[in-house]
Every structure is written in C-alpha cells, then in structure tokens.
Amino acid sequence: MLKKRIITTLTLQNGILFRTRNFEPDYRYTHNFIDMWSVDEIIILDITRKLKFGDKNKKFFFKTLEQISKNIVVPLTVGGGIEKLDDIKTLLNNGADKVVINSVALESPKKINSFASKYGKQCIVVSIDVKKIDNEFIVFTDYGTKKTNYKLKDWIKIVQDEGAGEIFLQSIEFDGSLEGYNYEMVNHISQVINLPLIVSSGAGNWEHFEKLFEFDFVSAASTTNIYHFTESSIKSLKNFLKTKKLEIRV
Amino acid sequence: MICIIDYELGNKLSIKNALSKAGFESLISNSKDEIKSADSLILPGVGSFNEGMDNLKKLDLIDILEEEVLGNKKKILGICLGFQLMANESSENGNTKGLGWINNSIELLKVKDLKIPHVGWNNSKVINKSKFIEQLNADNLLYYNHSYAMRINNDEKFKIILGCEHEDSFISLGAKENIIGIQPHPEKSQLNGIKFLKNCFGGFNA
Image 1 (cartoon, each protein chain N blue to C red):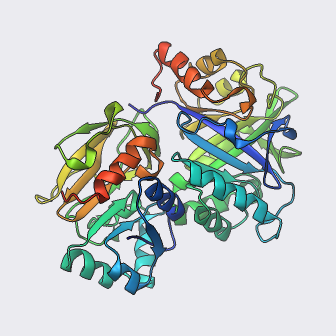
Image 2: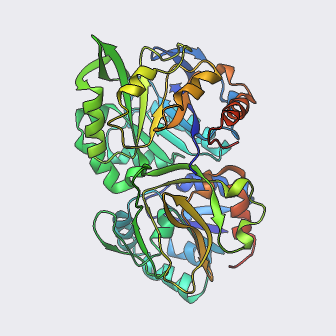
Image 3: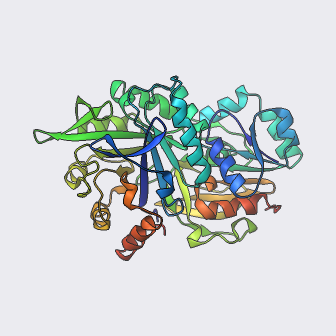
C-alpha cells in the first residue's frame, strides 16, 4: 500500500537556505539540519523575487541544488521562476526529478498541458498559494503577493483538466505559524481533488500531521520550518505516526 | 564504466549521483563510441513515451542500442520510462510503437478509488527470486512516480521479479537475459535503491 509521504520544503534566496514566515525569508539555516535518510521527498523552491532562468545570479541556486542532489537519494522536486520547457530541462539536468510550477500556470493554464506532454504529467507539480479573503479561499500569484481572480476550487479543476501530476497546496497566512495545517482549506477541496495532494504550511507538532492525514485523500505533508527537525526528528515523527496506524515508511 | 543514455529526457544527474553512492563510475552521453565502449547501459526515465521514442529516433540511437543490447548482449537497465520504452507500444498520448525488446504493452493503470499518478513509496511482492533484490528490506519499499505501466506479461522469456499493486497490479521489476526493467526509481529509493543498483551492476545476469 502506498505510504503517506513526509516532505521537507527548502526555500532558497540567492542560493542560501531560509525558513519562511508568511512567505517572507525569516531565518537562515544550513541543510545539515535535514535528516536525509528519513525524509521521503524534498521540495526546493527558489524564492528569489523576479529571478529569471537566464539571469547570471541564478547560478547560486543551481550550485546549491547540485550540492543537495549529490547528498540525497530521495526524490527532489524543484521550482521557482519556471516559465518555459527549457527551464524544466535545465532543472532536470541539475539534479531535479520533478518540477513545481505556479505563476506561469496562472498566466497561461495551457502551459501545464504543454509541459506535461513532454515530461509526462507525473513530472509536473502545480503549487497553489491560497489566502482566505471575505470567507473565500482565493489563489495568489507572484510568491503570494498578488491576488488572482481564481477561487481555489475553480483553479484546482482547471489544473487537473490541463493534466498536472500533483498539487502542492500552501496557505499564505498559515506559513510559519506552527499552529497546525489549514484543515478548513483541506476540507473545502475534498470533493474536487482527484490528484495526489501535498499539503504545506503550519505544522508545529506531530499531532498536526496526524490530524492532516485524517483526510485520507491527502498524500503528503510538507513542512518548511525544519529548524526543530534536527537530526532524528523526522524519524521520531514517523515513529509517532506509525503508532497511530498510518501507512508510513520508517 | 556505465553509460547513462542521454536522450534529452530524464533525471540523468540523479542516476549518476546514486551510482556513485553505489560505488560505480558512470557517464552521461549519447555518443555512439561511448555507448559502444561502456560495460553496461542505463536508459533513464521521466518523460512521456512518444517524446522518448521521438528523441531516440532524432538522436539516431536505436540502431546502436539494438546492436549493443540485442547483438552484443550488453547489460542494460531501463528505469521508469526507460523500462517502458523497451516494450512493444504504449497508449500514452495516443498509440506509440516502442523498441519492442519486451513483448508487452504499456497501459494506463486502471483505478477507481485510488489516484494516479501513482506517486510515492510502495511495497512490492516477490514473484520470482532473483539476485537483483538480495538484501532489500522492508517489503522492497521503492519510490514510484507514474500513471502508465506494464500490466500484463505475454513475453515468456521476460521473468517478473517484483510485482506492485495500486488497485491495479503491474510489473515492478523484471528481466530478460541482459535486459532489466524497473518501474520505480532505484536512484531515488534510499538504501533499497542503492542495494538494487549494486546487485544489478555487480556482475549478475538474470
């Protein structure tokens, strides 16, 4: 049976690892903090604003990506600033196994389809940044700074129709809060989601993960705030979830 | 020296990194000389089937691969899409003809309750014992990421080693003489994956 995945998301600015709070770089740390053997997958996002793939400063990101990819034997999903097919090729050549897209999909949803046709849908993860406004879950773009006209459920349907492989759902207000995942948002999409779903933002203790996996359609839990995930902490999280009878790889 | 075939798709660097952890030297290339002089070959994955076949044709790699694999019986490991390309055909994005080394078809997984793509860590069942899976632990837990698979075996010479289930059942690992195909990603499967690569390139044939 397919195991529930525990994912660590690393956010990089100019090639340097940061943890974030409400989508802003907050605290610098080193990647030695990650338990490379217990984690099931790693997501790496370049959060350097307005950095194009052709920009010479993108090399700092590639350098860190290459270093990380050398040291791990788990899937590496990479994103931040992807605009075209060639950008995906560049990432795969630098150690990525899958890619995450966001703003490019919102600008032109058809691009999801064109990327998936070449690299297979399993390679294309669409990240969705959400904020609740006037009692509606609204999709944001440009690193969570700009409101779009899409309501969450409508956008998920489009993303699925265009042939994405997975959805990576983030809550802008819950990012870095440590108060738990946005369960209301997860529950809100339960009837529309038909792709593997990764939920991010807000985990602060082991019970938060357990509560998230009560939604059986959730495939993976991600956390960016790994500062308390030192050395053996992912292992203890997994042992905890295993005692709760969840399907977990330990 | 292991040559990871560069057909402009796939996570070649990840494979090279994992091979080096398993203790093997490798290079990423599509040069005919390097394919010829390599001891073993890897056909990597990540991509769509039609795009994969188009690229093999465009780079004029099919003849040299057939000469080495079918003629000289050089060991080749196909990973994920690389494995699927060894089949007769696939229904991904319309019907596309494959390399035809394994007399089977690639089809979409048939699921009703579970989701595809089938992404993540899953266990697999040993169908036939093999040296390739010696010392793998925890139910042969490996990392999968695919929607299409080899679901049925019609090739008498192709021996299924591992089978996996995701509502539908499909072939996870199999071998036919010097041709080895694996649906999950050993290069991303932690210690189990590294052990598999060691077993695979440590000298055993099927």
